[in-house]
Image 1 (cartoon, rainbow, N blue to C red):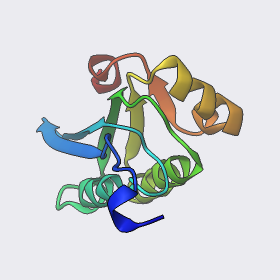
Image 2: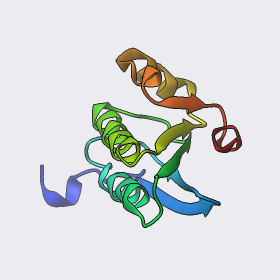
Image 3: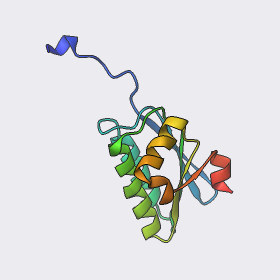
Image 4: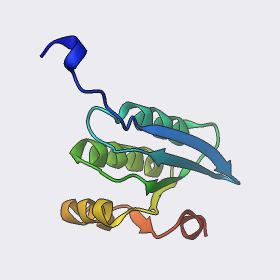
Length: 122
């Protein structure tokens, strides 16, 4: 396919981060797949290795319509990094489609999943 006719990805992944007290909150917007995951990897790595330990991280998935195995792997790596510091990583606000993936691969039995960011922070 010629370069000019290649389709453009409309939904690039965006991650914004902020702190809620001792907890880093990473808000994710867009589909998480193998090609789009680098911004999420970078944001979660920063959150898990910041100066404050143990790392406490909430990943807000409320604006994520799709998650593939690359995204699952990214979340699992971040979970291991956070728990390796004596902290935790929690998922919040996942759509029904994302919850289905988490359930199918069993990630919801490893990482705590909450209906909202506020619930995950409590």
